[in-house]
Image (cartoon, rainbow, N blue to C red; front, side, top):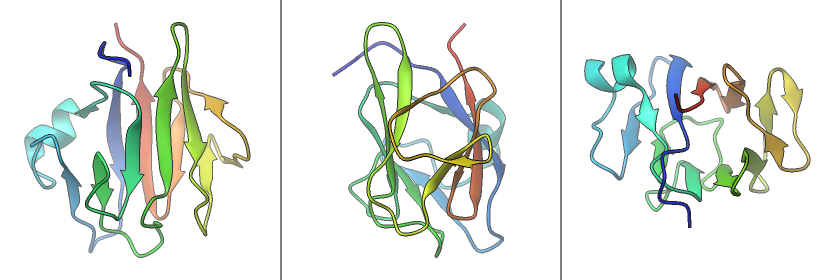
Length: 119
């Protein structure tokens, strides 16, 4: 498990009924979360509707366990966790772990996130 910051996710758009939440105490969709983004403090970073995920998306188009962000010593990747509607990076549905680059757009259900690499 990587304990070094692996960047952050910025919410670009989400369903009007969505409530973004995080187990790490970032809040539930407040302005600070939107302004500062969601820091990826360690990997694996789990995303989905299930309360056991690191980032919980209350989005009907998101699977309970939708995607995960993982890293090695050189790169950070996102992989689909067998979701129904798929995970998209820069408009392409991913089938294998896909490297994230600064500015990559991630679509999970109806939610769009932007990845920002660490400085």
